[in-house]
Length: 160
Ligand SMILES: [Zn+2]
Image 1 (cartoon, protein in one colour):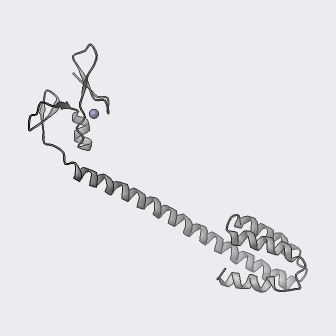
Image 2 (image 1 turned 135 degrees about the vertical axis):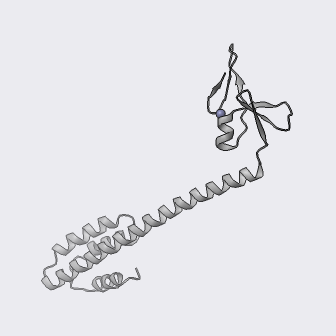
Image 3 (image 1 turned 90 degrees about the horizontal axis):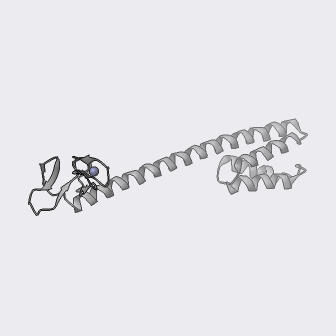
């Protein structure tokens, strides 16, 4: 720990007047491991109650308070970083989708009998109007069995 609180803790650690250094070391280990810093602070609080010297106890409690604040700030920074990371992932996904659209420019379509057909008229189609209008995707509709109707396999719209 490079912080002022860290240095204060180092000072406490080297103070031979504290009778139970192993408890202190356990707490310090927990905090520096960053795993269960809250447990470490709880342990420090327990330890503080065993300090007989009131002035030392007060100082110790103050350090625990500072530690708690630092912990809260660290957790807040971590949460911000996680949020930023999620935002970046979303941006990357959007950009990838944009790239994909640019790689596959949509063909021009014409509307005929409620369905889209390619303007260059290669006889392919028809295509779902909803999917094209929404995503610029050409989804072939399939004939509904036994009916004079077609259905989009993606958005399930039925065209009669
Ligand atoms: Zn569709």
